[in-house]
Structures are given as structure tokens and as C-alpha cells.
Image (cartoon, rainbow, N blue to C red; front, side):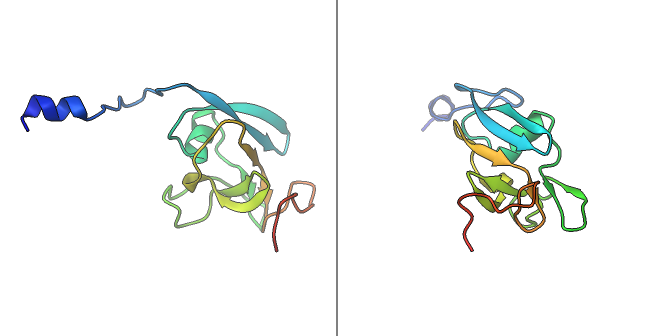
Length: 120
């Protein structure tokens, strides 16, 4: 296969450009909820960061947490996604209508309650 045929078959991703048809995910933090724009192939963490959200949980000691390693090793980005606490935002692909909620400590909502859909 020659160089021209090889490059024609390989899609090119333009850095800094969000491509495809966008959609929104719903992010509910301690202060309310808002629609966050996202695009196909993005992680929840990426969509939140681009929207200016730097933290989406409170650690057990009360400090704010968000993305740290970005590859699913550290678990700092865990939050409540579609009712499931301790879900890693960096490992979850954004999709239309996804619900992302602020997590407190081991998997509670900001009011101290256990989210619907949480399993023991």
C-alpha cells in the first residue's frame, strides 16, 4: 500500500476540534444542575473539564477532588454516574442524557443520602 492510500484510509483527528454531533450530559453539583456539552468519544471527565468543572466530589476529609491521573488508576475522579456511586469519570464515555452527580466521601449525595440505584 502506498503512502497516499494509507493516509486516505486513516481518519485524521484535528487537535482541539470537537467533531461530530454534540449532545449534553446533566451535571448536578452541590449548587444545582446544568447541561454540559459533550461530543462522541469523550470521557465524562473530559467533558466536565472543558466546561470548567475542576472538581466533582468531596473526599472524606472535605477536600475537593476531580481528575488526577486520567487513566483510571487513582480513583480521584469518581462520582455518581446514572445513580452508581464511585464511577470513574475518566473511564466512562459520555453519552446523551447521562446523569453525573456530585459525590461526597464513600458514595453519598451532598445531602448525605444514598443515591437511587446504589448497590451494597
